[in-house]
Length: 240
Image 1 (cartoon, one colour):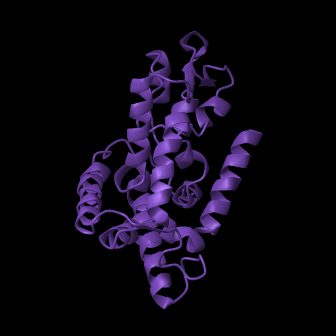
Image 2: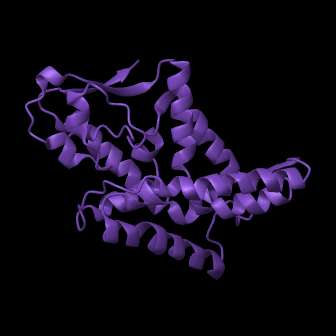
């Protein structure tokens, strides 16, 4: 394993270890509760930052920092099955959820207060038995079980309510066409060893993408696994 991938996986694991403390800053429920009272809470700020980050880094957060990713990639050792279908489910979840946020905020007369630590205990998410129940329900029900039942990063493909923010940000960047982090293919260097496709944590057809000279994909998390796994240099990072 290349040093960059060791660093990436190490960061993901640390992020996962801290998940009990940070869970509420990714909560889709607390943002609804806070919006109903006109409060901009921590998860609202985090989701906005994910949208903004995607303008330059795409879904790099998913590949390098997400706590749910740390858990799922650890499960690869036991369940390396590829996931190739089901990316629309998260949109079915996200669209009405985001619509509800807007409606609740309007009914509250707009946002008038910022409380980043809303409903946390001294800034920490798990402060009582109720918080522990929520944590393990999310971890087991939404992250661990789907990974074992359906395959690699199933939560990212099917259920993640954060991914659409970054996908929207990336699409906006593509329309504006300003420089950002991406992948560059060199089809003439590809020897069709299938290493990139087999290693992709998001189960993307990377080898086919290289052959077609089209590396842009809504499910690409810019983790660099294909970059570091290709001995021929058929895929490289680029700032374009």
